[in-house]
Image 1 (cartoon, rainbow, N blue to C red):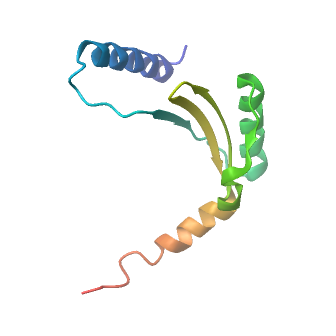
Image 2: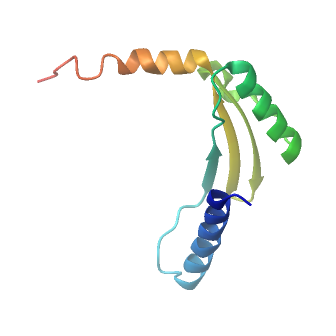
Image 3: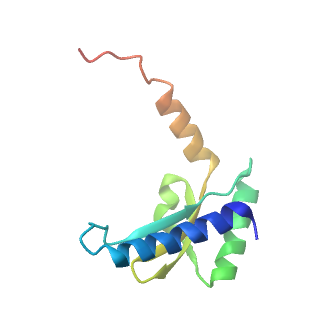
Length: 107
């Protein structure tokens, strides 16, 4: 098992134990764990999400597709595992938006 995966699993288990032992500590009503594939092209990004969808028995979530995201997820009650590919159009739009950062002084 990969070290980062083992550390994540241990962290989640320790969080659950901590929350169980400290009912006075506020906690969110839901949690989403995101996975973002690390590829340079949309075909590879979509292929990885398709493979994950097949492994977890879910469909592609087209709700985010107008924003340039290709995603799938599985729910465990209020806990969600969500794999999201941010496609090139969305990355380009984000880069263009960020290119104006700091150029306008509203004061």
